[in-house]
Image: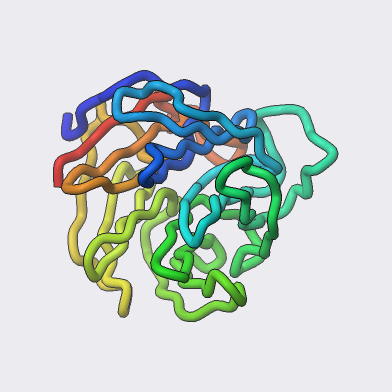
Length: 230
């Protein structure tokens, strides 16, 4: 195995990760709650959110940003559900709704990553990673990728890592042109990478243990958190 499992998950489907000064933010795909954990996996805080079919999560500009990946398949519908692909802007202290904007391609979304006033967003039609202005929500740039099932994102140096869940690959793309800078191929016994975040020289990944209706149940692992030393 390439990864090292660090602790058990506090939720059933940990689908998005983001380290910040407050701890490790976790997006639960089942109930759409957000957790803040310490390095040992202890729960420091928990928010209920308006997110539906929660996928990625990031923190920046004084807000939490969550990826709402269309119609939920893991819980009963709520009155606030839209069944649309959206990025939600939430209050940093309460998790309450502040604003929202649609995904760049109008479809689903998994990965989302803050980057100094911009937000990187995964898209499926076409398969691409977009850079969006966090104030105007306008698209600044994009690059296309060949690999399937783009998921967690993490910025590092002149690149952005993207987890490709089904193939168990984590690829670092050049943010200027999308060329591949590095690639990590996980072993058969490693978790399926859904959520991802980098702290120092350590990459953290989470396995959401959820294939969804578009993916085979054979692509389901177990809800866990693991690390990779970069």
